[in-house]
View 1 (cartoon, rainbow, N blue to C red):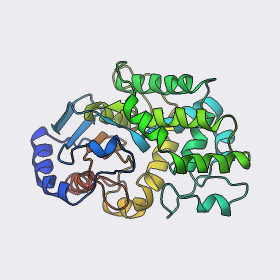
View 2 (view 1 turned 90 degrees about the vertical axis):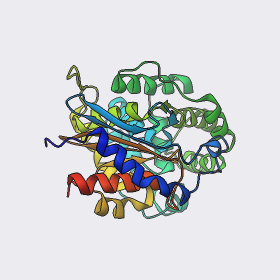
View 3 (view 1 turned 180 degrees about the vertical axis):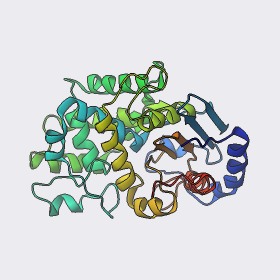
View 4 (view 1 turned 60 degrees about the horizontal axis):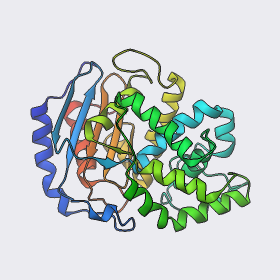
Length: 310
């Protein structure tokens, strides 16, 4: 795939989506995220040849939120292996909301359906090697540093604290799974690690580079070093296709057809083999929890450049 997008094209497509910022809603159930400006939008593409183009507020930083689930999955798979990970977390998509507890009551033995819903993500974070929450988060940050080639990236302490204090439902999910031996250890320590993981802060080009590493079969773009084993990068991208856009994943696959993962900060990352990494940011969300600007930008990009994998 030799297709490339120019900065002028991105600027034009971003401008076309600007009116959509009024149609979504900035999430208020995480107090720190409620402060975000819905008109603060950006898009970036990191092509596999190293060329990076962007438009909008490129220096704005935002938290990964659920996008971190893909990175945690990659790390847990490297730490524990596929058999261990998928003995505790399933591989199937769900039409339920990302924070639903219902399926845990139906499955035996309360195994989360996939790593992209909150229950599955909490179980995945529980599997990452590290004695303390900060050790787990530190190892995840090291992976982010490798993928972005930037060791200055940290987590936002205000956002992490805000999420930790209001994680009532995630605590319930965790205690339910602990009762059924899906997770072990301290629930409070797990929530500490998980909320810091979700609060890892990047800008649009850094996020696009993360997507590009997945698109490059887990290899560093400059050195060719294998950061994530190829077969594990493939597993992560497959989950992005089937479960990455909450319970809008099916319609997104039809309309856009790019492996992608969204987060409630308003960020979305895409990874397309042979093309590169795509990142969009727009804090106003639709009813499914996906960025309204991001969804439209990705649909426009996929349509204009014929990028769907289907």
